[in-house]
Image 1 (tube, one colour):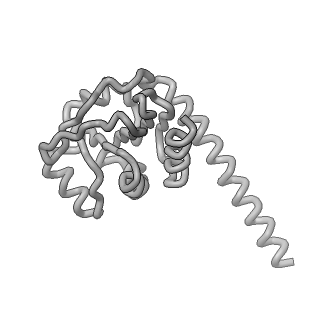
Image 2 (image 1 turned 90 degrees about the horizontal axis):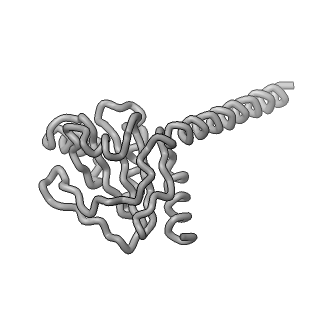
Length: 168
């Protein structure tokens, strides 16, 4: 009898998780429709360490918008960190303070991905960002292939990059 109850609750839990995942993906798809869908026009970014990050046009590329004050961004940061070890990733911190404050935030959390400080939300306006985090994935021709609003798992990000890298 006890095993039957455990199985029943486990099945219900998995159903709720599946249902919530479907809802989250539908919301993300809906929110993504308003984003800038044009090919990437920007060729380089100025990072918080004052260096320039030049986009390698021979490989897929990720632009990830986030903020230090965003709770979901904090959860997703380790996913972006891992992805940045294998792919070209530049992140854009929006309204997150000075370069020094962002650097301190990254250091506290042992993160070292590339960061642009979008203090005036200029880049956010170009990309039509309305929620954080938001991730754009471009192919090697700098055409947008995926855009995601909200949390994305490490597996989901790697799967999308695999799709762009090998099937495009």
